[in-house]
Length: 315
Image (cartoon, rainbow, N blue to C red; front, side):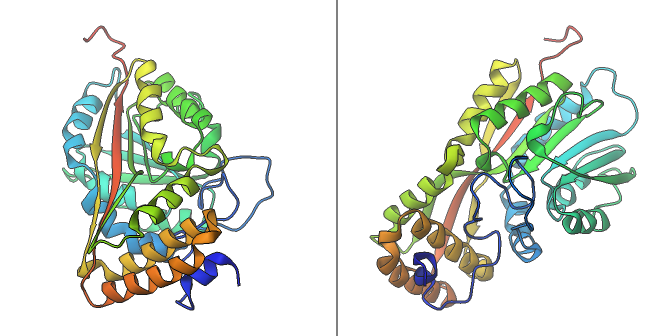
């Protein structure tokens, strides 16, 4: 039994995507690089479904009005908004955002997993906030290869839980593509590296530190991603806003809390195998508290909105 399995201490296995994703540098549903053999996707639809409600509640609604203004001010805009959703998974971002924007929309869903792309397309919303039509198409592809040409005609780029699994070079490429295409980017739910658990346990900080180190493995940015993205977009003339988007998990979210705990602790032990014995006790106690309705968790994330430099003389 490996250390991560030992930490689980015979607790049922982690839903794929809630825990370590194995090969560094690959997001579960998006192929990030071309120099590795193709593998099955590592985010299970069950995990994406489990977190969708918490994601929807957490996303920063304060960014919606600036986004609407930015979309209204896009130069030469005609017809439906063209929205590129990167690493769309089961399409939760579209289900959250499309009904909050006015006007006809055409969503282009990007992912490496054809099953998830099919699910996202079937479950996509059909109408905007004002009743206008929403249409969808799917593209199986590599988010790290996006170029301004690939985003030609784009009105908006969106993503959830993407920035923290990119390298600095990939975030710079994403900023280049979005600003080169002159379209806003709404990039939500990037890990911030901070977790608060109530009641407190002396091992909380050590588990969190090991998890954050795991997030930064193999040149991935993890909790540093939003800072790097803010700087990259700002350096290219974009106006950038960052807002907190924390999960608040209590008894009503027990299933999500328990899967998140298994994944959080499992990643920490994968990074620090010497923690395995202590982590097994810690995980048992935390799962028991969650099951009893006694555990509260705040998992901090950040949402980023980048609006491109005006190109029509507007200030």
